[in-house]
Image (cartoon, rainbow, N blue to C red; front, side, top):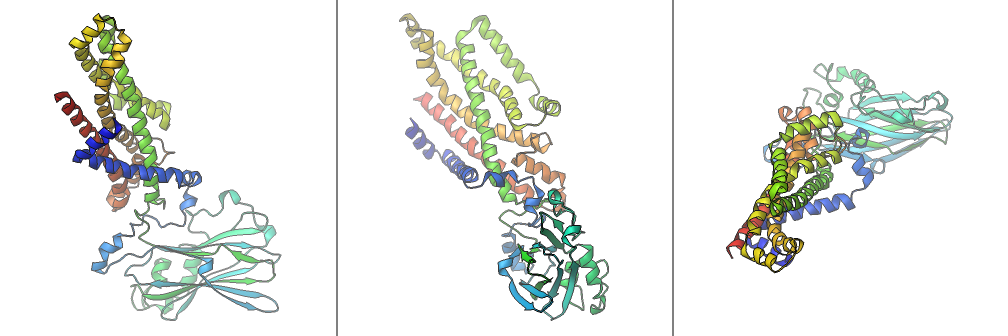
Length: 480
């Protein structure tokens, strides 16, 4: 039966395309479940996890489209400590360690920001940190200088170490007994005040300009200066216990990843990936449960008839006549927005349509001559139902199952878009809601909207095409 079904779907072009799309979705689901760690999936709503990503960056492939126009956007770059060239100077009283990162800048737009996260183990004497930028025109700016406080004067703020949303502060934080975590932001007061000292170098006023528009600018006009930049992170240490580690240079870009990033710096592709099993779980769970309930409720209602069948039909009519979407919103407001609770609501209000269809077919089938003959031969109602009626209802139920999956996914997406979904799960509807809340459609962040919207459409089309092919299969079977 299964092989015959697969063969018939392949013969139907729509069904074959739907099966290919479903296969693609299943590959994404398997990858998300088995190759993405649970810990990573749980970090979706943690801003600190995404702090090194750029904010609202377009997809990387967007630069391919812009290349013929010569207007490519700055790429996001992360340099690690192993990428730096280390130069040390040892003196009797101190040790100077220079970590130099080389960055080739060849874009017509300024990068939006940069930051330098670091971790340093302190000794008895606090070290001095300095950051220099050497430009392609051989000008060198000291953009940051700080003498770290002694170990005893630090407060232990490990629970809120380095809030990346507070870009105006470069104050390091003690994360354990002798380790300090810090980050130098290009937007910090320290960096802006340091750059203000170089106002005489430029032939235009730099007051009010961001650090990037000063560091990467030509001296005669506020346009990007292309070439090789060197970021030098210097540590003056006065004892052997001071150790620099986990140093990075993050050049924030305007393009990043396969599908870009959102307002919270989250990778949109990662959200799409881990949202795929959630969407399929919602759709398949709701469709399977609704189809199962609708099959046997409609079968019993149609085959029994009389007063019981009439009462069961009345129940179906009541459910069908209810404004279900409004009820969903009201219940979500008063009883919470738990995903499993929403799935239960979809099941509760999703079975009547399937039940009504199966009831209609059951009434027709039970009046066929061979059903009457089976009764005259003394066959029980239970055997008649299992042998003769259920097999004829299964193809219709299967087709309805395939068509119910996109209905459930679209329903959850609509509720999430209106703000009544479960915010703890990265569903595609939730991503659309967050995009709308951040005015992505008016600010031009199209990748944030198109990606989840396209996945909802692809999933719906896959099951609709399969459902239509199964409907055609049923019609062909009836003609035969």
